Length: 115
Image (cartoon, rainbow, N blue to C red; front, side):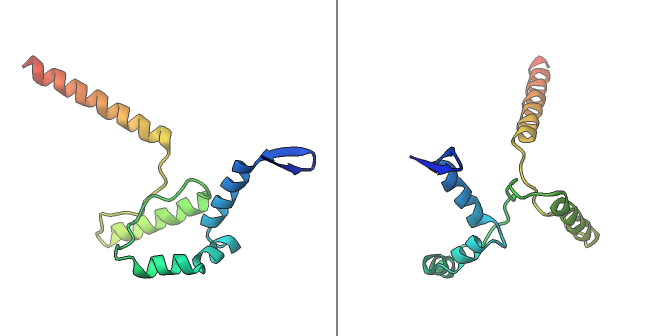
């Protein structure tokens, strides 16, 4: 199934992905409507779990958000805190760190085995 838009056909799954993104975009009318949905209200009200901070999505992350998070981290550090505000995870950087860790573990294992 396709949507016709000015002589351009777009797949329905692309439209649905855009709708899902709008539902999570804070400040949008879709986000507000979702929070006013009775099922969502009931789910939040009956939840016993405390919300855990999780890394934000890359979608919508801007230099301004990054600067604000840096300021928050500076305030936390001045107060002696050690848990800082989470940043979005970039898959390529995460993979780079995993590869560095595995190389380091292999090197340590070789050194320990040679002794």
